[in-house]
Image (cartoon, rainbow, N blue to C red):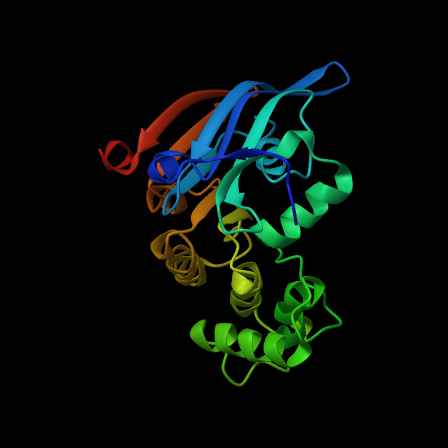
Amino acid sequence: MRYDQHPVAPSQQNHVPRLSAAGLQVRYGDAVALNGVSFSVHDGESVAIMGPSGSGKTTLLHTLAGIIRPDDGTVALRTLDGQGRSQIVRVDELSDPARSELRLQEFGFVFQQGMLIPELTAMENVMMPLLLTGVTKSEANSRAGQLLQELGMTGLEQRRIGQLSGGQAQRVAIARARATQAQVVFADEPTGALDSRTAADVLALLLRSTSEQGRALVLVTHDKDVAAACSRVVRLRDGQIVEQLSDRQADG
């Protein structure tokens, strides 16, 4: 996909966030969901967004991912142009079809219930984003099988989602998020429906599949243990960031 945006000098690439936002405002009628929020995440970083219900966590996640267009403020993604050169894309300025294509090509998603297609098998769910981006069926099948194997799903590839446990379904969701080599993965309560042991396993797999491989991970969670495993914690209240902690500060 071509974007008429701003190139990034090679010497600056390591210093420019993978994804950043400034002055985000989102309103639903008279209710203010986000009020002047600024945010950034770099390659290899995992950021947990926390806060009470109604604080704006999911709205922020959806705005960063281009699902919601902000009423004010900017969202910028560092990506590659057709020549392999780094560029900045203003996500908030893209048309709806362009944002949909951007989400397909640049972002991965893991949700609390997986948001998988129940009528399809684990293999078919992971293949789907690859096929939508033009990858051949044989190549998509090979890539999906490799990802599922890496995530401990060998022998379960042909099971439909309803035949899998909650933890197994989340492994499929993580594999799907990795399928297109997305550089930013968004996760909304990825362990919320799991028991503590399964949640710990899924979180470890999610971190290993994203930030530990140089990708950026942005996740919403109510779980302090999940947040503590991330490199940074951002706390929201009433649509504003009220606190940011690094992993060392959070541990202290």
